[in-house]
Length: 269
Image 1 (tube, helix red, strand yellow):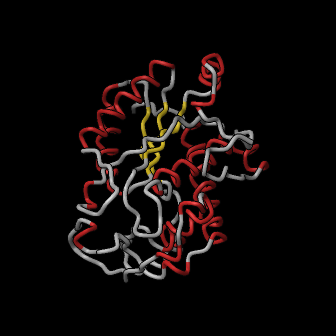
Image 2 (cartoon, one colour):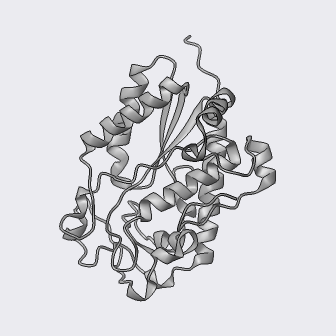
């Protein structure tokens, strides 16, 4: 099985892959030759585009968290559905971390233009269904705008923005988050996922927790947290819990993607 350096390759159900159209192995676009890529487009006109970030995740995790998690989920979805995955966008709309060290941020306008170019290139190759899979909350506004611009630009293309937990019922996410807005960063949930996906990027002995609380306004992370963490009970994170959450994120997203790719185009009435 091909692996990504530092990141665990998702293990998926062969039976579920047979049901959803995959082979059990992800289709990683950058690992294909040009003729292989052309063959993939002959089989499917859908593609997954993971969008992550390079930003601080407290004192206990590496800067790659959002990209690693969304890439892992995307590879798992690809293995289950056969929909190819292009390389993730490693930079995100991350200016909200303020002066906390390590972050590399894009302006929302920059992300929109980058994704327009990526989708435009893939459209020219023959793709017509584009799933923008997000791994960082504050990318959401740029991804919504990107989807709107592309839907109106191409008459024969479909674009959908999903977070990797969108298809995962909110009450089932075990993140030790009390409040409905679920403000969280480098918390129990993300730390558990990374302990499973890329344990070398986690230093749990350095973790600092911060009680979760609700607020009307959105704040920069450095305005609410000295450590860069937003969430409680981080020290209780475990790799088995992360494995369970990763599996459910992959399977629920794969079912939604398989259903969406097979959806008939509407007939105006």
